[in-house]
Length: 285
Image 1: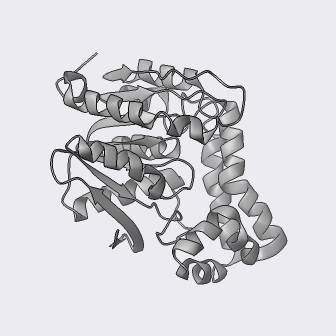
Image 2: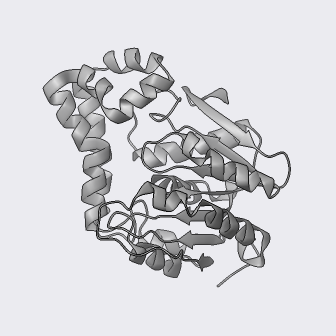
């Protein structure tokens, strides 16, 4: 893995494959890129070049709690600059859950670098907005208020970034609690505002203006409802909807191993899509 300074923040990244079409993928949650390495290796075996990176505040990249935009929009601008620095593009962009939000944000903010979208386990609806606003932001606000930045450092997600990049601990401890809470409240508000949107991160009208081809693979739980993927596929002008043979589950999040078992099928769907007429810019619905 390599590191690069992007917009003042040190990001870790890795490239898999040395030939073929470029694809940039991001994982869900606040997880690092390592969870996508097996998928990236499968895709590289199929003559695709895959760019993975740890988003700021995730994995082995630098923590930087700042900015007025939604965190997923900040991530999108980081990826845009990373693509420019590496002289890669246009590229197919995608990911799972929060990685899918990043990809859609990149397509909305910088459509010129996105040749296609590859999205699975999209998030939307009241349950997802409330749950994720709590999971990503409000629980850290509560920790900061009761235990200061030491408690934030000891939380699961930030402890993982510190383990991968020890300098993140001193950076977090040096941040005023009030400023940390202010940014977290601002980022949480973007999830509150998305309750009536087709998915977190985009409105109906925004999705309708995305003209690049898109592969949509819906999720199967209450945070990633099947109906969200189906609705997004209906709004995107050039979407291809593909479903997996997974049962719908009335749980917050379906077991991760259930989706890990679908990795080969997801790789097949991505490869087939990017090599077909559906996955190039000549395709329209």
